[in-house]
Image 1 (cartoon, one colour):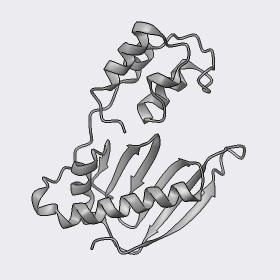
Image 2 (cartoon, one colour):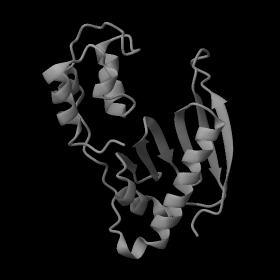
Image 3 (cartoon, helix red, strand yellow):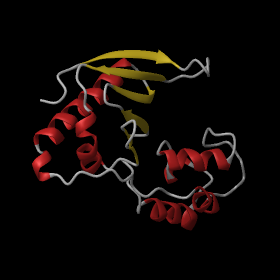
Length: 173
């Protein structure tokens, strides 16, 4: 077993006092650095840094970064959601480590959508119906994995389908 347990630290953003979401750090009981290349292969991480080692993933609109002794998760609804995500990651970490003989380790991040390509497919009305102040910010949120073609009410018909098709070539959960 690679990861025997963790301790959760739940907090609100200090930069944005009005934020409705929570963030968490899972302080790990064990060093999971050696499993990161295997986990990258299994979970399709989009960002891998070799030194110091870290793996960044997108899952269910969450940005998750795994360091050797800590996991950071953003935009959580509550502590229960944090525990659910970190429990899932603990299982994935242990499974990847146990099956490492059958996994080709990778230190390459997945191909990411280009900001301008996403922006070109948006209506560029800055209507704010998506909850973002501009279409540019919405496009950034799409690239981060926090939003997708279904989150833009002004995006209809062929444009909506075009954005969905464009995003389908990238790994998003």
